[in-house]
Image 1 (cartoon, helix red, strand yellow):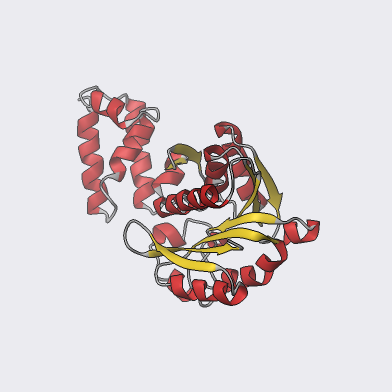
Image 2 (cartoon, rainbow, N blue to C red; image 1 turned 30 degrees about the vertical axis):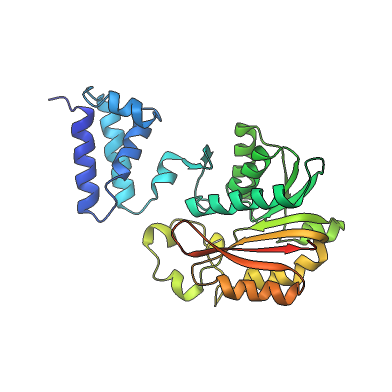
Length: 288
């Protein structure tokens, strides 16, 4: 007996839920199996009979997710700021809260720099390129650089930049060192660095700690190792008038803000909550 799309979808949802996974992942996997269709197209095909090949693909994808593989690595993509980014095991999966970091950074740039200025922006920790590419595409007067210590991540991000038509300069290196060594000065530095304390990584969901790259998760013993390094390096690269934007872990906002206030005593430093009310972003405005 042939299986219809809605029947396979119901099975996948139930099977995932029974195995401790989110049932809505079934819909994402079904859309992928049907040829990366959008939700409307999938709904229009609910009463279509699935091919045997597609049915087998769905079962395999569901099994992979049950075993702990993130849906985004199975489909090879994730949505971010209205665009589709390719992702794999070499990069952190872009999160919705990081979209808010991009959005507020763009707002601050528009408020503090005039339309005829070329703004030198650096995103530190390239990953999939979600931050740097989004910034470059949303504001074409930004001269965007991005740095990652892992060449594998840079390759993924370069592919996304090519696919999405973004002009971004990719640099391989450690934090701000590529700019320090070149004597390059920046108007804006934005980063979503690794910030999870090592002792908390052990209790993360398997789907995160065993699948996403550890270098993109671990913030050292207390979670602040990269922020402390930023405080040493930022004064060497920022112009007198500049913006710094960080994503932080929930509960880390005031500590990171305190670091920025010590490093830049005259700056306007504040913690910004995300849409869920968590302290997810810290910003510093220098030389207003």
